Amino acid sequence: MNYTSLSKEELLKLREELNKEYSEAKAKGLNLDMSRGKPSATQLDVSLDILDAINSKSLLKSENGTDCRNYGVLDGIPEAKKLMADMIGTTPDHVIVYGNASLSIMYDQVSRAYTHGILGNTPWCKLDKIKFLCPAPGYDRHFAITERFGIEMITIPMSDKGPDMDLVEHYVNNDPTVKGIWCVPKYSNPQGYSYSDETVKRFANLKPAAPDFRIFWDNAYVIHHLYDDNQDEILEILSECEKAGNPDMVFEFASTSKVSFPGSGVAVFASSHANIEDVKKQLTIQTIGHDKLNQLRHVRYFKNLDGLKAHMRKHADMMRPKFEATLAVLEEELGDTGIGSWTKPHGGYFISFESLEGCAKDIVAKCKEAGVKLTNAGATFPYGSDPKDSNIRIAPSFPTPEEMAQAAKLFVLCVKLVSVEKLLE
Ligand code: PLP
Image 1 (cartoon, helix red, strand yellow):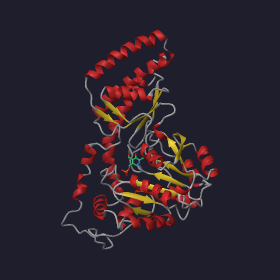
Image 2: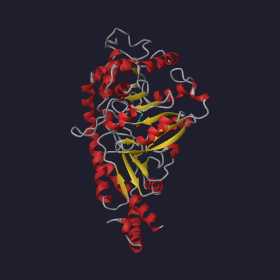
Image 3: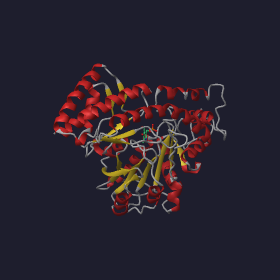
């Protein structure tokens, strides 16, 4: 039944039925959280042996003899550099292994550019205007960083091939106040889109008007596939930029937050040799070294890229049923209603839903009232403001598949109810 072709009488009747269903659903007293992309407890359980990978009896030296119990080693122990470089498809000379999370590296990179400048360029704080391009819907915490530094954010529309590259080229190649762009190139947050080869090549071949323009390439979901046989792969950005004569144009970030333990993983920064040296000079003022015991623990447990991939297959086995349960409810309940569309990702942590214009906030509020928490509507856009008020991020990872199906059923009910109200306006 396509809602958009119903008569007023039909809509009124439908609204009555839906209101009744909603009252019944509310009485169930649900308490479910689909708001943040957190691994479930069962996913964390399969990582527990990481904690046993080293103990007081272990040899706590890295492969080059460094005592991991002590101070030192700014850029990571060699075996951790190799593991993290392999994870993102580059080489150890291009990486710095950091501490427990990648978001703080991103913050640092913006902060340093702001206070001290990149590779000898004028610090951004001394310039009148700084702008960042923000492909959206995107990751709210990226936008929060640039907002905090007073950087003007320009929304760039996304497609299933990546950001609108005509617009990206237009801004980057002509406007010297455009200093960066936030990218989640693989299984993007929230749409689960992966950049096409053409998109990555067009990124690598940008001709920035600003010499200190950087692509902030957040490869957060680089090995986070849902399927064995249907995996997205993207071109490796550092080598593409090198080939295009733009070796310094990318800051890449990743971590094992959603591989091992969020908040207790290992994070990595990857870039050109010049950028790495520039960062290290400043990093040495900030720290004597990151947590090498955690680096050692991770390497001893995962051993190599195959170890990481095998581990991620276990996660996929737990995540897939939740995605499939959600998608099945969406398809069954909304498939031919014309009041919503959604993405069907092959990996990552999210499904992105598009409602009729002007409905997202009300849908999220209705869900909340009945005990299902969703990410705030608007959060996926710069300044927390979705111009069409239509995007909703669904995070299926945390609840069980059964809870997820329950939550999805309430969600589709709220979508129907709010859409009918809208159509009656
Ligand atoms: N980047 C993206 C795109 C994310 O979705 C997330 C977490 O949801 C993060 C970064 C956070 O990464 P970390 O835990 O390494 O700070």
